Length: 107
Image (cartoon, rainbow, N blue to C red; front, side, top):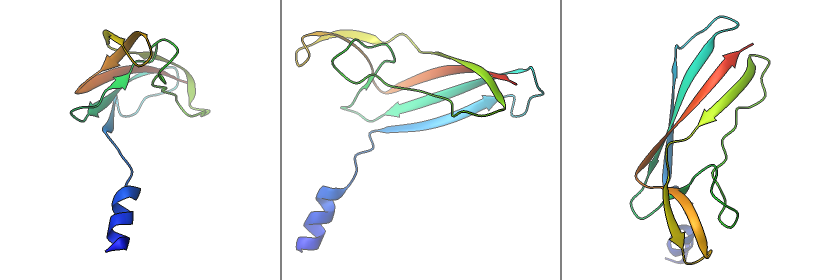
């Protein structure tokens, strides 16, 4: 019984499920790929924007270093802005779902 209780407390929370789609699926050098990174957020949770002010931890997106990637640009949807009593400032958040667009230039 103690083992069952301990494993229940040790479970990792995973309130955001991520998925990625890329168009086109293959591209020649010099082309640009359009990636959609979708965050599905569990009820009762939120995700901070990429540009939320200091206080909460903003979401960070990055493309791993690769010789195939010349550069990339991330675009975020418009977040919901609300005053957060915990941080005593306006925060930018997403609820339910957020779709980030990433333009990737192929080297």
